[in-house]
Amino acid sequence: MEEKFDVLNELGEFTGKVASRKECHKNGLWHRAVYAFVIDENKNVLLQKRASKKRLWPNMWDVTVGGHVDSGEFGRQALIREAKEELGIEITDDDIKYLVGSTSINKQTDIINKHYNECYLITKNIDITNIKLQKDEVSEVKYFSKEELLERITNNYDGLAYKTGVWNFLKRILEKY
Image (cartoon, rainbow, N blue to C red):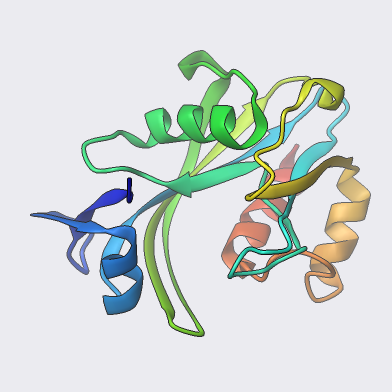
């Protein structure tokens, strides 16, 4: 069953229309997305490596968890769902701290991604040996030190999915953390 998203206008307001993932990406319709970084007690950041068959940024390191917000769903609900689907981890509403909202436009091949993003932080120790990867989405997970991630961001996002806004938010989090 194809995912359905609430269509937003350029101001981020709900239009009352619902469109499929394919329609949103083909026609450049604004829709909602969420992402979160998991940071453990030692200030290490858990990232996922995108599967090799992903259309955007294959084999690149990406946010811990993220995805689209389904029609009628709240961002926090989407984040909890995506964590379970992609990584097999249970998070609760109490684990999640909202940080910032942003917009992003990304055009690659035949995909026009226009997102209203919600960024969250999850401070939790997760044993990666218990993670169950959704293989068509994620090929690997790994904890990165604060220093290594700051170096990758500074070094033209070395090995990271090219989502500059996302990594700049993480840089700010790590500098304040």
